[in-house]
Image (cartoon, rainbow, N blue to C red; front, top):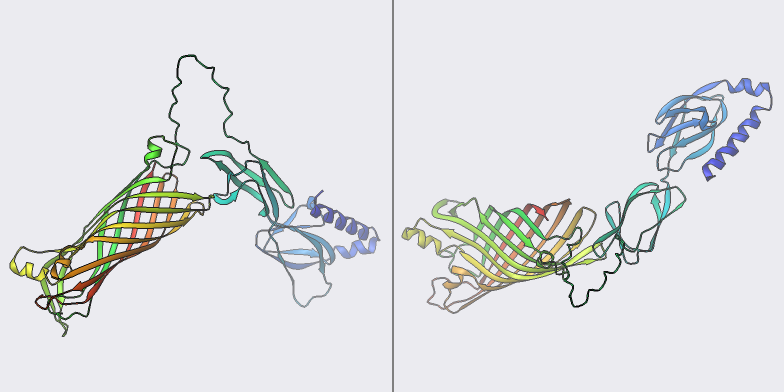
Length: 444
């Protein structure tokens, strides 16, 4: 018998003893008074005396309660029941108002065996087995145990109030078949294993970024020839493809190794204007032209089902250029804007948390720039440029589909060395690109 049932029995016995004291008490019990009953949370069921007498009301409610002391039971799903005496005075200046706070009801979940298996409760990673969980909210919970890419247990478990609920999963999801008889003089051929459930093999996505660029010269001695640049609302769209070769080839090793490719092109070229010191805006024959490419190799590791770490390296090409109408004036104008085409080797990493379907992540990388395009040809002595990048984003996993949102920064820092005969003279410059992106993809 549970504790609430014992208390109810004691209260019912006490009420029965009071009723047997005499006819005068029974006569007084017929008098009632209005009582308002509220609970946190609302929606609780209210009973007087014993539950067998039937539900009185569902909170919040106002009822006719007997004057004097009456056992009251207040219950709600997955909450601890309240059982006490409701005391209604004979004389009250205003109707009685009673408020009850129903505390959550907890039980314990004990997972036995399956050493090292990853535990997921209600789609959230909760460490590895064996493990005991106290103060699990009473009710049904989805429990999954996985090990070596196989599901050992996948069931809904009912956790009862103040009770240890134990589950034990088998060591393997499939029974071990008996060994095949040896065949003399014939070598057995091993068939490739199918990939583990949930292990990705191919992913494709459509990705769109909105970019904002700001190029600023340091100690610019020729501001009339080389101008700072601001661009906003540049839209890049394209495709992303990721392949997991060891999974596709059934090699059974390095399942986190992937080949990553991304290509995006600007879809909204913008006309370039020049703003003078007096505020006058002059159109030019230039339009913006953006393009981005990445080819890289990634390796990802799972961290006990609660997160991931990823490292990667590859090639990137980021073009922030300008096109002209082909006239001499157009070419002359192009020489005054920061026309850059960055070809670089990227080395970076990513860390993420696995929160059910939601996976927030943080990335950081270094760009070892191989060339910078037309901008680096304007200085006769030397130029150097390096880049860094970072992003904060999240992925929502919807079965085979993924939705990714990300905000990032990319900064290229320039150093210039010029000769007095050069037309352009500056000590350096910074090229800052801010972007926000969204992609929708399918993973197989």
